[in-house]
Image 1 (cartoon, helix red, strand yellow):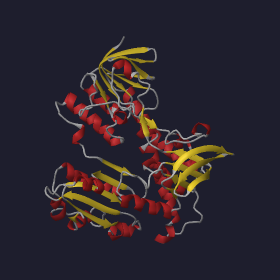
Image 2 (cartoon, rainbow, N blue to C red; image 1 turned 180 degrees about the vertical axis):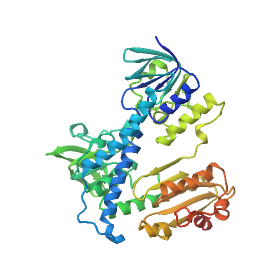
Image 3 (cartoon, rainbow, N blue to C red; image 1 turned 90 degrees about the vertical axis):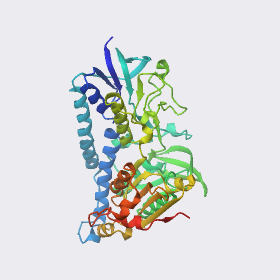
Image 4 (cartoon, rainbow, N blue to C red; image 1 turned 30 degrees about the horizontal axis):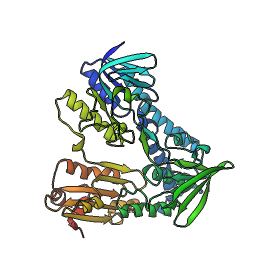
Length: 459
């Protein structure tokens, strides 16, 4: 039975970086991977989807070329095989880089296969039984499929199998009006598909403020995406080469005929086949591994990082999990999950950059606050680019003058939000932004001080 100082199960965003740190500290480590190296982000998430978003943006701008005085032959068409080939090349480079770095790492042994606990510090990977003092679980998550009657009888797609699509769906029906559904919906509409998004809630991306949801719905509808809100999927069946989705909503019962069905209704952790019960590792009712503020499980010497711990569902939160664990184990740190500020982006066009609290959350908290909102059509850089959809908003604490949150829906919003995020981490008052900074012109970020000048009490 091989003995290791540490065993890392899974090679998502946290695992490989942690492996490098631990091996560099002289530990003898093992890494177990049952599938593709790099996890969701590299293989079926951020890297491939944003590569496809770039192709969809190129098609969209080609159709708008005349607005900029550019002549492009009409109609603009999309070669989906070339779109997929480009995506595969970009994602493949990342995947191969992660695998190469693990297999060539000193003090590290890679085991190919599915890892299952036999005991708290004993794990089987194929025929090998590995024993380690410290074990780090980084197994990620997968698409969650709702129990819609008939769903098992149709060839539905999810965010992973969408990566194999090298053709143009005639009519893509999407169940789920949140981040994954919206990105794929706009993307394939721009590729040339007819797209219908079915959302059970009263509006898109329900965790965001209502005006954000409305603005996104407006530009999606303007591009021809059909939205069915407050509509529950009550059944699905095959219809020739396509599908028929039965929904019940404000207009009663109706059916949507589509060529393909994408299920984008959330994620679930990959924890149900790890043998966690044999290790005594506790999970919550949804299968997420319970961890404390430093990502330790209830079993001494076992940690859970990334999507499987329910403390974040993003690449950057997974990487931050690595930073927290490495700092605490190797650098004498006392870093905590609760120290980080919620931040993420929605990669529609225009994108949404988010940091901290929403306006609704601030209102609910009852704290005295100020807020300001600026339409992107008033931002010169956006106007010059011909990309004026959306708006920027910041919310601040009236007493401490600290920034509580920001929602930047507009061109560059996914980048500009980091100006706000950095101020929040520095615990700098909004008056620094308002009175002391000089930004470059012409940019989107230069309007943040303008926005801060317009702060007013919440109603």
